[in-house]
Amino acid sequence: MARYITHISFTEQGIKTIKDWDKRIAATRERFDRAGGKLRAAIEYGLAGNGRSRTMRAFTSEETVRIVKQLG
Image (cartoon, rainbow, N blue to C red):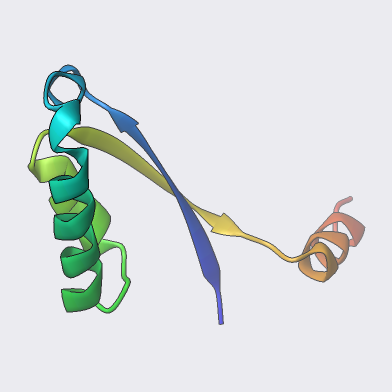
């Protein structure tokens, strides 16, 4: 199964409300549960205005070796 890494950075709004971090973490976990841990949760987080997310594919070392060997 493919794995992904999501990097989330705070927006200015997110920094201003940093003291609510515990509540936002709880809400984010609920979003991930509802979304089945899929990318949609990261999009919902961004829509809340507290952060920006960037999601990228993660590769195992074996996958990386295979990819690199395919290069011309």
